[in-house]
Length: 303
Image 1 (cartoon, one colour):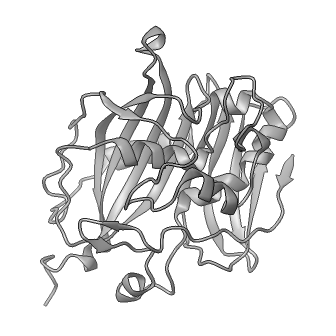
Image 2 (tube, rainbow, N blue to C red):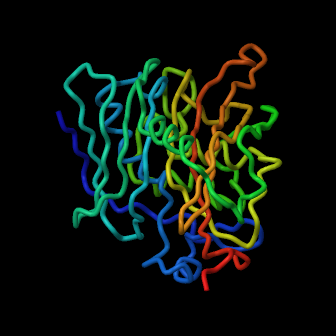
């Protein structure tokens, strides 16, 4: 059974993103220096096109125990149309395949989508296993990042509608929702939900953990420009709610390298900060992010 959404034009919201004192790959000039055709829209933005399809399949289970696990294939530039598709064996299935494509057929992402608690082997579980089995080789940009490095699980995290998310994500949740590719009713300000508060979109969960986690010890040499390669967002005991306090922990679980990038895999865990549920894990984020070797001036060049 195939469920297909409408064509949509995702909005670019990271043109002004900065980190370590410089612009990111989402800036037109920075993208051009790397030989890209344009400034790419951030990969998680495309998750929102799957949420209406997933909630139609699984109802409220999607928000409490849903998982989207995606490998980003080709970048999307603002103005381009994208269509999302879920393929499941049939009604009642707990896992399916996802694909997003541009109007001309260019693939944008592929992966799996599921509801738990038993998600089976997700797309990123398979990709992570492959990454762990490979020789990493010499690293020059992320050489100080080590597998097993972890955070203390005490970084505070909270997202409300009107707090600016900072230089890394230069907008508020309210601004995001006015431009989000697909809005689910549970996400709107004042939405009446079974959990007593509006739900944070799946695409914003990586924003939540990345913005509030200090990630002390993860040293990426600068100046360098990064990108998202793979992302999995999994609800363990969700949903993640607007205005609710959480804590974030993280661990480096794998490293990788190719001719164009050096990369590292981080598993974030979001915990409820309410004293009544202090040790309850709410969600996990598995993020594989890379650094363009061409963006680092001291990277060894072939002669």
